[in-house]
Length: 358
Image 1 (cartoon, rainbow, N blue to C red):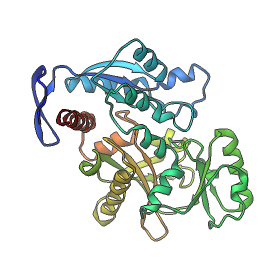
Image 2 (image 1 turned 90 degrees about the horizontal axis):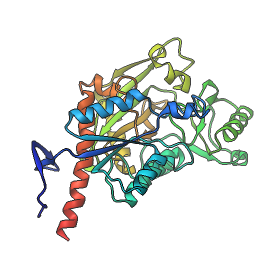
Image 3 (image 1 turned 135 degrees about the vertical axis):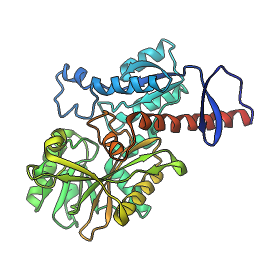
C-alpha cells in the first residue's frame, strides 16, 4: 500500500494496526447547534432540548486542541452552507449537530459533507435517518432477532383500530430525544387514554407516534465506542429513579432535573454482560460509528430489550450520559474524544488506502 508523503509532526499513533504519524496540525471543523441561538428565535426550551450549550462547545474545542488539532467553529447547517459555498474546507469535521427541522434533520450536515467529500465523526446520513425514527430502527432490529418490545407506529388515529398490543402501553414521539414528549401520561392503561395522548402528540410534534408494550423492569444505557468489528461496549449504567422522581418514567422533566431525581451506577456480572452484548449487536446491525449510546430496559422476565439508540450522544463533559458513564468507568473526557477521533481517522485512512490501491 502506497501512502503519499505529507508533513508530519512527532506524534505517533495507531490507526487500524498501522503505525502512522498524525499530519501536522490537522484542521478540524466543529458543527453544532446552540440552544441559546434558537431560544433567542422564540423556540421553547423543550423544542431546543437536544441542542448544545456553549460549555459543551468550549470543552470539545479545548479537548481537541489539547489532543493536537487546530479547530474551527462552523456552527449549524446554515453556517456550513455559507462556508462551503465560499470554498472553505477542513481535514475533518467533528459533527454533533442535531438539526431542528424534519425527520432527516440529523442527516443534513453529514449529507452535505459527503457531497463535498469532507470526512466527519459519527454516523453517516443513512444511519442517522434510520435511527432518529425509533419505529424504523425497531423494525430493523426486530427482524434481525434483537429483543425489543412489541410496537406499532401511529401516523393517524385510525392506525389504532384493531390494535393487538396488551396494556399497559408506552407512548412517545417516534423521532425525538432527551425525553421530549414523554411524561407520566406516556404510560397508558386503556384505549380512550391511548387515543387521547396519541392525538395530542401527533398534533404537537407533527410526526409519527410510537406505541409499544411497556417494559416494567430496570433501565440502562450502554456506551459504545468504535465502529463495526472494532466497536466495544462500555459497562452499562443503570438509571435509578429517586423517590421524588414522577413514577418510573425517564421523562423530559426528569432528564432536565437529573441531579435531584436520578442516580447512576455501573452494572457488571451476567446482567451487565447481557446488556453489553445486546447493545453491541444493535450498534453493529444499525451501522453506527465512532461512539454513542444504546438505551435498554428489562422486560417482566428480567431480559434486556432495546429501547433506542443515540448515535449523536450528548457531549457535555459533566451533564451528558455518555461522559457520565465514561467517568464512572474511569475514562476521562479527553480519552473519550480521542477514541471518537481515532475511530473516524481510521475510517478515513481506509478510504484513502483503497483509493491509492485502485
